[in-house]
Amino acid sequence: MAAVSVVRRFVSLSVPRLVVSQQQHRTAVNTTSGAILPKPKKTAFGPLRILMVVAPFLYVGTLISKNFAALLEEHDIFVPEDDDDDD
Image 1 (cartoon, rainbow, N blue to C red):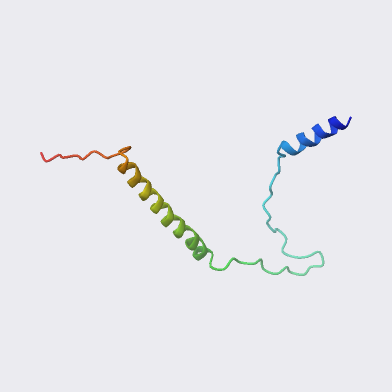
Image 2: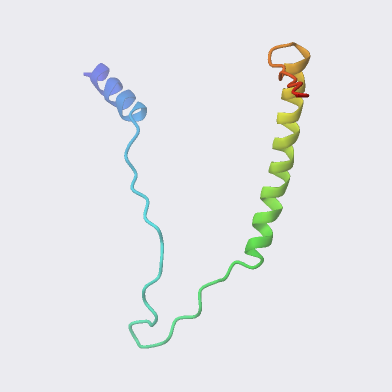
């Protein structure tokens, strides 16, 4: 009987459960007593924050790809052909 409970516990831990995520949004504008709710918080400097995150990762990505392309060319894995079309 103890072995069955151990197997059930293992199966319940190893099988991922479906979790339905719900977006939180507020549809009410007043309380039950009639008072108006305060304005929701606004994210300050939203586009600036996005730029501060995206720009460094783009830069690091270009550095990685440039170095990897140089490594491929150094080991003659991928060397672009020179097109000498002087016709």
